Image (cartoon, rainbow, N blue to C red; front, side):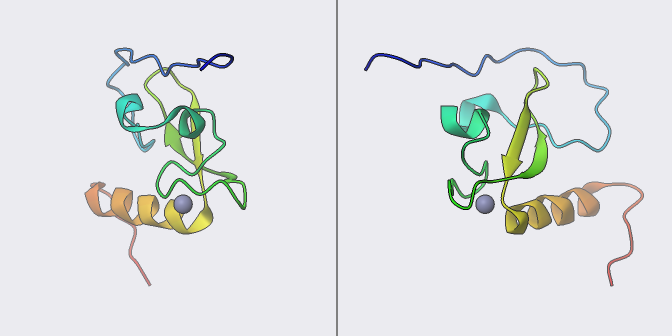
Length: 86
Ligand SMILES: [Zn+2]
């Protein structure tokens, strides 16, 4: 294969992240890292537009709304100040 060879570079990030979900670049495909596919379900259409979190290097990772809700609930559950669900 020629052309794009975008690699998600693993990097040691500062561990002071608070409420941003950090994705493991090794578990994402290049299209997911570029935001062309949902980082959770790999859906490319409709184009994922909801920021789900970031890679360790600060690159935004996007996903579809349903998956964003999954992340949100996951984060809420693990957060100390969990917001009360309705
Ligand atoms: Zn999705």
